[in-house]
Image (cartoon, rainbow, N blue to C red):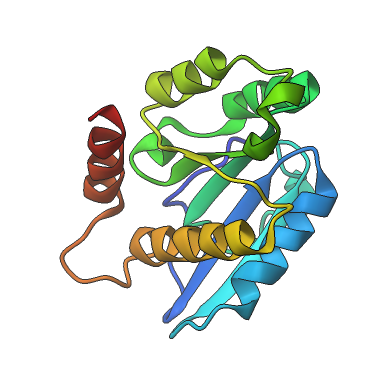
Length: 177
């Protein structure tokens, strides 16, 4: 099984690639469409996967992935287990600013099946930011799309003077305050 590598391919000019990994395909599609509707000055490709590893037979056609967003549905324990199992197929160097955890369904905390501590610990263990959102609400969906798009722009190297690692570190420090 192939491990996802961040620097095994050359980047394409004025483009960025986002990989959304999660068990809820409907939310993935909704978020991907929201991201593609946003105004941007570079070409974006969004790939969807329910879990990792990705199929090795198409590896030679797959572009370099700039950001991996693991989607965890707060009302599904399976969603968290799926993400935890997928993390084994991500190279350690991806966790230097090119991974984030996107927790969906936070508007329905009363229906919560996943412990918030487990999600926070996941972010701490993998040194990656945890973003909370509600993709069922249009305004939150747009805000989440804009936030991921900005992170993707930084991770792809399109923002001079800001690296993915420094941005990720800044986000984690802001969350700790």
